[in-house]
Image (cartoon, rainbow, N blue to C red; front, side, top):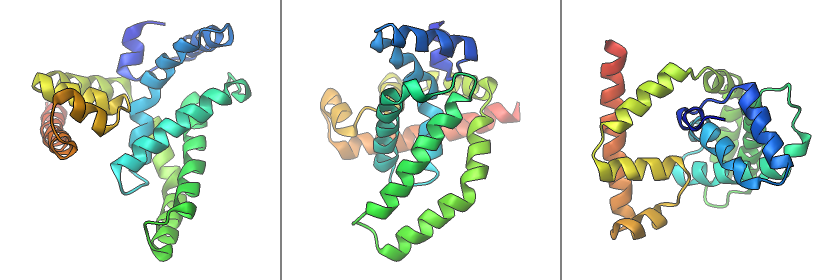
Length: 195
């Protein structure tokens, strides 16, 4: 499997089969290619369903852990992204049921909205084309180095506290870096679409 495919967030059936074969043969580190290829679309899917980005990151990490444990149940002729989203969807439902930080009424409302919108979100998540991801990566490449590192770490699922320690700053500063990066990326993508 080419590293460029994993970086772009796309993995065709042949590449996926090769990675799954490597994992089955005991090369568990090959799972990183699956995480890289599906991390951004999965986090986007989850971010559309939960309120806090930290929750989306935690749910994405838990989804990848469960998926790794259940890899033997994946039917290779199926859509791997859809399989991951199914795991994530169940985790979101459990998250809303067990969440003690929000009121029960708000949890029920969010759970109902997630169920109503799940088909649309599934279609949107599966329609990410490589050209759109390439456009986003071009925009990420234009960010200042520190901002680019913070974005990449976030996409890879690193916790904000770890990034803050690496940068020698506070978690709040990392959130500010992410917010500024989001604004710059939004503007850049809008310009790219206009061309």
